[in-house]
Length: 361
Image (cartoon, helix red, strand yellow):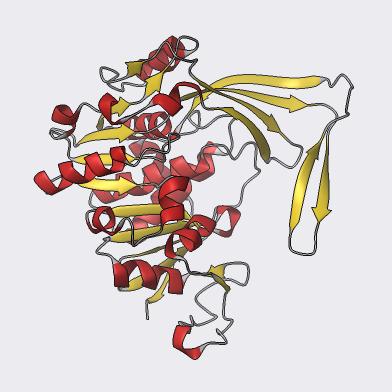
């Protein structure tokens, strides 16, 4: 049976993971907020315990993920003179179609040095490289029209022409479904600005902070009522664990102001929430020992989308995404731990993940 055709569009990077022997984490407070800072000895020579070369970038991460799930995948990115061949070879090894990858001599392939800490978190030193020259001219528009699904990842370049070009394709080809992970530029502009694309979006992926910015609506601690009764959209305390935040009002904004089909809001170790406009679902993370969190969001989004493509329920889609992300964070890099369809099936039988639901008021 012919597998669905997916185009992943966005960024590609060559990543180097480093674990420093001597480092510290300092908490820095102001009257308004608190930040954690990674500390290395200034002017010193810091010993490196581990170095791992891997690959990243939203389009390549999701491309590899969909290929491992058995779909026909083409990835559209831009690479430069250095590391570009490595990025392409890695995709070919994973069975991803690389015909539409563009090259530029203006810069190197995007590059990240990722400093892993003893807590399992990371600090990323990111060089945008060729990603910042990725424009609408690089899109194979005729070929994309043959897709069943488009996964549009966040874009480095502050260029709104790519999302607008995708919107035109969707309007002309209503059979194509879009999964969208917006970039900073679109998030800052808000959902009113991007209503037309959201109206044609099957699945929107944002984290909690991005969702709040996009919808211009704050999230609330679970079970705490708003002081303004007109904005009150209270969830029963039993629905969410005490560590999770109430995003129901944010969800309501998306579904009341756009025709987006499904919205997924992730919150790192605090789990994920998803809605189809009628019900709100919560899925906790699977307990784990964190090795590296890089790529967990892409793994979750690709796992969730794969489940929807396969005809699974929204509840099961949350489980697919959670299991994919859980496995990825047990490895260095964004791609090593990505699961196949068969592997996710086995893990679903082994692990009891309880997805709670309630009506979206």
